[in-house]
Image (cartoon, rainbow, N blue to C red; front, side, top):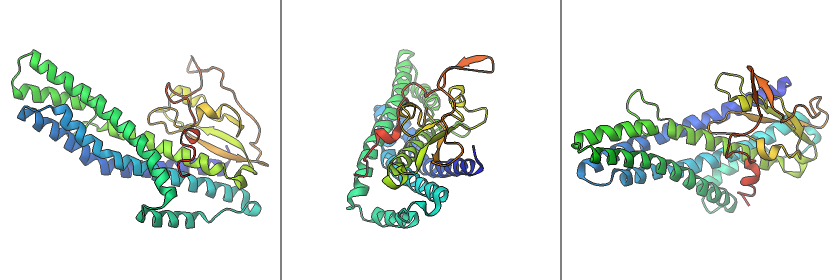
Length: 304
C-alpha cells in the first residue's frame, strides 16, 4: 500500500471512529433509561420487557442520523480521494460545497434527496434496533420466568433482571460495558460510510479513472483472521469479489477498501480468496456469516 493509500485508510478510520463515538455518547442515556424503565415496571407488576423495548426504540432516529451522516461522509471522502489522486484530470463538484448544501438541507427536511436517504436508512435503523430490543427483551423475559419459577420476591427478580441486562450489554451499571448499542453504532456507521463511498465512486467522472480497490485490514489482535487474510487483496472495480467482501464484513468490523486509479503501480490484481495459513491454522478469507454483501449495492440509490 502506498503512503497516500495508507493515509487515506487512516483518515477513513478516524472519520468512522468520530461518528461512532458521537453516536454512542448520545444514545447511552437511552439505554440507561431502558434499564430503569424495566426495573420500575417489574416493581409495579408490569411487563419489564415491554417497558424496556419502548425506551430502546427511541434510538431509531439517532441510528438513522448516524447512517445518513456516514453515507454523506463516505461520499465526501471518495471525492476528496479521487481529486487528490488525479488532480485536474477530473472535474468534481466542490466536496465542501456539497457538505454545506447538506447542512442546509438538513435544516429543511423537504429536500427530496435527503428524504430518500433518511427513509432508506430509517428502515434499516428500525430493523437493527428492533433486533436489539428483541434480543434484550428475550433475556429479560427469561429472567422474569426464572424468578417466577423460583418463587422469588421482587428483590430477587430485580437482581435477575439486572444480571440479564448486563449480559445483554444494555445500560450497564458502573464497570459493565454498554457493548450492545456500541456494536450497533459501529456496524451501522461503517455500513453507511461504505455505501456512501461506493455510490460516489459510481459517478461517471470517477469511474473513468477508477481501476479498482485494495482491501485494508486493521493490523492488531482484534482483527479477525478471516479479515486479516484479506489484507492487501487487490482487484479491479468490477471483480465479483467486491460483491461479498466490501466492508463491513462483520459486527464492529474496522476494515476498509482503498481506491486504486488507472496509472497507479498497484493497479494489478493481487491475492486470492483461497484458504491461507495463519498461525498454523488454515483460514478462508471472507466476510462473517450474514455479511457477504456489498453495502453500496444493498443501499444503492438511497438518495434517488
